Structures are given as C-alpha cells and as structure tokens.
Image 1 (spheres, rainbow, N blue to C red):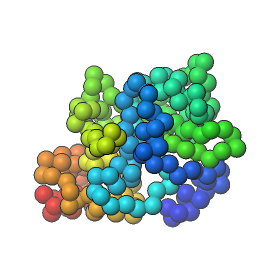
Image 2: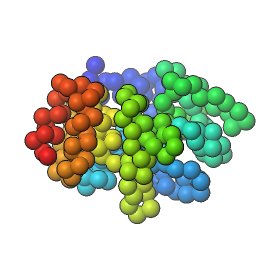
Image 3: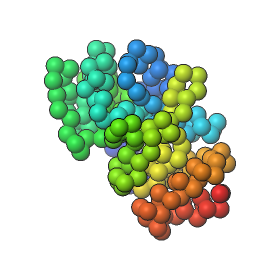
Image 4: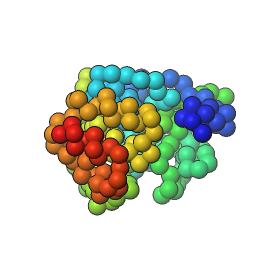
Length: 209
C-alpha cells in the first residue's frame, strides 16, 4: 500500500485531519506549564527552511507529563489515546497504557482531528530512545527554539523516522543534510549503526560528514 493509500485508509476509518500550524499550537499551549515541542515534518521544515505537504501536525511531550497535559487541553479539546484503537480520555481520571505512543485531539466527534501528540520517554531530564533505551540525551540538547516555538532537533527526528525510511522520510533526510553540523551527523550515524548496520542512510550520512 502506498503512503497516499495508507493515509486515505486512516482517514476513511477514523476521520479527516484539520491543517494546523506550529503557530496555532503555540496559541493553544500558551499557558500550558509543561514542556512541549513541534516534531515530525514540521520540525524539519523549520530547521531546513524548506517545506513539503503534511497530513497532520505532530507535537511531543514527556510521557510523565501526560496527566497534566490532558488536564490542560481537555478544557477545549477531546483527547483520545491512540494505541491500535482509539480510547477517549476523561479529565476526571484515566490511565494511558504503556504501549500508547500517541494522543489525538479534536473538538468533538463530528469534527476533524487537530493535533497528534507523541509521548516521549524522559527520565531525570534525559530523553530516552524508545527502540534502544541505552541511547539517551539531555532533553535540552534534543530541542531548539525560534520565535517562541520549540522544535525537536533534526537528528532526533530523523532517527525516529529511520526505522521505516519511507520515501517522504528520505526526502526529509536529504533536505536536512546540508544544514546538519558534524557532531549531529556523527551522532545520527552512530545511532543508526547500533540499530541496523545495514541501514541505507548510513552511507549518506558518512558522505555528508
């Protein structure tokens, strides 16, 4: 199934997505006391100064903050846990399963989805790579900010994308490569070697270093 067909099937089953931007997310979360950041393709847009079409807007938060986040956004948006199936979360009390990696937000059942919230493992101020937990990094070194909006750093986002390496992910790699510095290229290449020594991106990263 192509990426387009896969997206169309998700829309058929679960409903459409409304186009949201990082600036709109910043407005929504202006008074939120916890940490959050723009992730996914939008974060790579901001870093590279280029753009491509996006199906949705991904935002990241530490998993340990999920209760506080739902309490905050639940005032204006319904929150659903997305883990194979969709489960509505009540502000009055809920449990998010360990295998749940995403929260989907929308105004109501007849409305399109607005934000996809990615739950990242963060312990003692360190971001933990979900597929190889010995790989970690200070959360402060995983993000960067511009004009009041915080973004996930490109080498972190590309590592998360690398497992599937879909055509759009490879496009994201290519548009970021000219802007990544040596330490970032080296870190990403080393992480990929630990996960999959045959990963096709490793050669591109080595050539770019």
